[in-house]
Image (cartoon, rainbow, N blue to C red; front, side, top):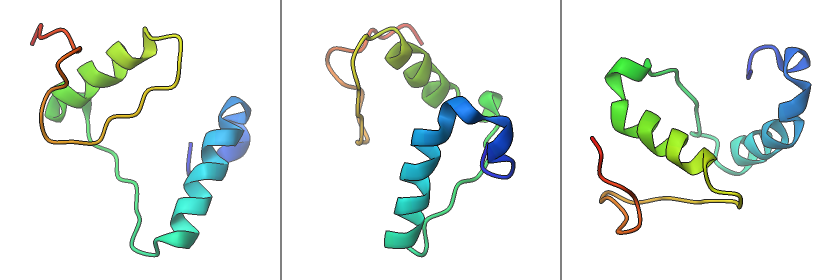
Length: 70
């Protein structure tokens, strides 16, 4: 998505936000981490998609509202 944005037109808004972050934070970078190496992040992303609103999570602990199925 980052390397070939023309292939991902539905993510134009997100790509714009990423570009802004990159300008504001020069050390900002995105790296690919395979799902098998990041199962909790994958679980968080899948759970967040079930919500019908924007969801932000920054922290080092599991939110109280998040089901603990892992």
